[in-house]
Length: 425
Image 1 (spheres, rainbow, N blue to C red):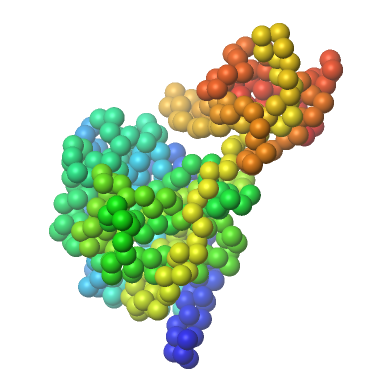
Image 2: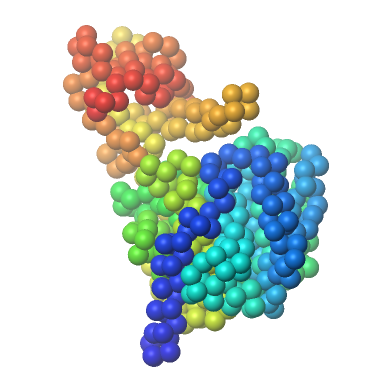
């Protein structure tokens, strides 16, 4: 690396540090929870549109409508010649990146009004001068309204590139064809089961430069996507430790990322995973924000082209070594016989519109030897036994049971969730 490259690298690192130290001033406070309605998002976008009425770098358009008629917004930012497409919530219950995209808009508004330190104002000016961002947040508003993965038609939109059955998929395909993005960011959430390779570390962020054919060949387009991922990895590693991985790179003939890569759009998948004590994914939202801004800077100065592919290849693939809860060495009784085993429980959240709150559901995911797996909560129940109240100790069930030591109550699980006794672990 020569002196000029050293200066570019140091400058980028300083910008990341400044972004992190000032991040709260760029956070969209209206969206602090993963569940928000289409109307909540539109109110945020409307406020940004109003703030930008006198600006020449911010425009809000109606891209079209969902199956149920909800408007899908297309926000453009910048005056530059490099078109970059970013979309989120293709799956309606994957909202982390939507929050991060709103933070990115807030970043430009705050810096362009002079409400930040000079280095970030300079960065903002540079990005606006060189890039044209095309942001499509909440591509699946019908699914978001229900907080489910699929569209109102029951279709997984990310598997609808070829069939083009959903109106939402058609809107994104047509927009990309129109703007011909130099880079395309496909922004998702992944479930909490993934580990960094085979380590006991849960994946917080996983990246992927999707394959464009079955052979997973690397052409110039995919190579540049890999190099940009290496840059984003560099930006995050000092702050996120070893919690970075790669997503499965099996070619998906029906999937958007794979087909966009095939079309020549340098496509990057970002999957927001698990971070301890962060159920609303606010930490991971911040890491999305940092990674994307760092990527934009690298695209404008082309520093990513100096990255080696080895750095991308060295990111471990996601493993599948985590359950939300593991109860180890617990004595169960079935059909009048008792035995000691491990139980893994998966926990899921959905939105209860009547109660205006999350409703959590749990189920037994595995029973047996779980020594090679880890739990986000992991408890040794040696000397304890489970007493079933209702339901059953069967896979996919959500039993209610007590955990006891002889006749003394220790823990109470209701529908698979610990409801009392947690201070005893």
